[in-house]
Image 1 (cartoon, rainbow, N blue to C red):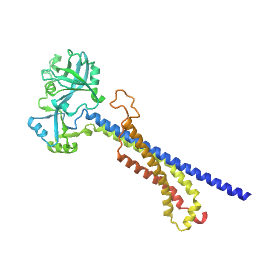
Image 2 (cartoon, rainbow, N blue to C red):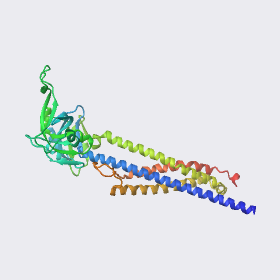
Image 3 (cartoon, rainbow, N blue to C red):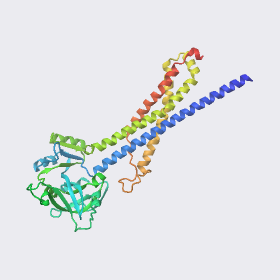
Image 4 (spheres, helix red, strand yellow):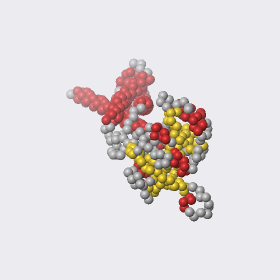
Length: 408
């Protein structure tokens, strides 16, 4: 009777231990799956935000922008400009004069930034994203017009329908005499008809006024000087190719910037945030993988006699280690595959149906933007392989050190 009780108790204890190890293994798999899914979703959201930023800026910025390497302006002439226009891959060349001015509308004043552009500015698919209302025109030589950022218009309380109130532009200048007390000698004054609003991003909305190049050149007394040139690339040519061609043509005296280089600080910030989020979630995933370590360690303790039998039959330590490493890999691989698939499905549904809204009525997009990049899936998989190896190596080594004589 005592012998039967002893055998039964051993069996049930062993069964409970096996069930506990199985449960712990499944918890490990679920933890890996949840962590992997979170990584896929968060990385895809950062990709979507980065892509959204590029799209928003593309509505205001040029595909390629030419600036002076030293100073804020440079001299131009028709022959030099024509040499750029005839370069292979250049579709549109827009001349730009840009500077700070004082804006006044019906007594309301603010410091803003005026951007004088040539007539082909709107031909570069400007304001394709965001909001635009009003006339898509910059007026005439005798009656120049302005397109205002929404923030500028709201701050100055501009009424587009009131044609009797112009927008006054003040620009500082050196007085003719140092002893003058006439305030009009310290600034140039000119008038624009506000005809439209644009809204892209607060950085532009709260600061910019778009005006004709001839108007700004006359007001700022720039003559043949320009602060920048904006280039639209022709269809069938890559931006990188034209970027390289322009740099070779212009030489070291000019900077040629693509869309990312024009906002390098912001793009770099988003990419750094993405990197740190990836590292943080990977660290959390590594902590979750401790379940793999514990389950394999308990399995090694439970299977000591079986391991001793295998070693007695001639199995080398390398084989024992490989068995436990494969066991850990199976747990992690199953969880990673489930996590990758679930993460892909969540991102696909968000991208297709916009399940999670931003909750901002005036936002450019209604839902959180997501963009899946396969390189992210690759790096997540590499991270999982490394974590699994680290979590499984110690239990595998412990299992390979089982004393055959002692256990048998």
